[in-house]
Length: 151
Image 1 (cartoon, rainbow, N blue to C red):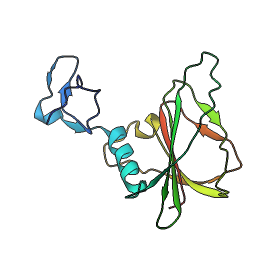
Image 2 (tube, rainbow, N blue to C red; image 1 turned 30 degrees about the vertical axis):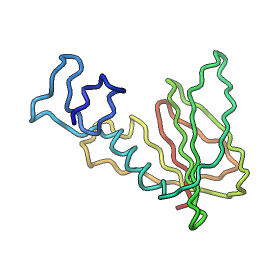
Image 3 (cartoon, one colour; image 1 turned 60 degrees about the vertical axis):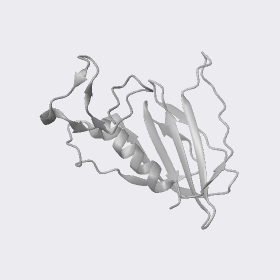
């Protein structure tokens, strides 16, 4: 199946269709798309089978009323592990607070954003992990996916 980008967006993990010229790319220029590839990798690794989706609420503080931050929380019902995926779809970085109703102290933080792929070939990217204290504000780079987890 080849998604030409006209069905429901250009979501494939391998760049095969040249939208500008409306044709497939030549075989020697077909390359993986790093951001979707790594994003799907995180989603599949940190979303367990039969996960419980926890309620999440976003209070929008955008002066124009446009929501650009989205969140989804998963809980592994077998071992009480949590994954919080936060997307900033906006063109500007955001700073958010997390209402810690689960009483978690710290989580592992992984960020996917465009700048970590700059000047790197596919496979050369190392997604760095750092600890995040749940009482701190979370900085969300523009156009990014942030994962907080205790896996």
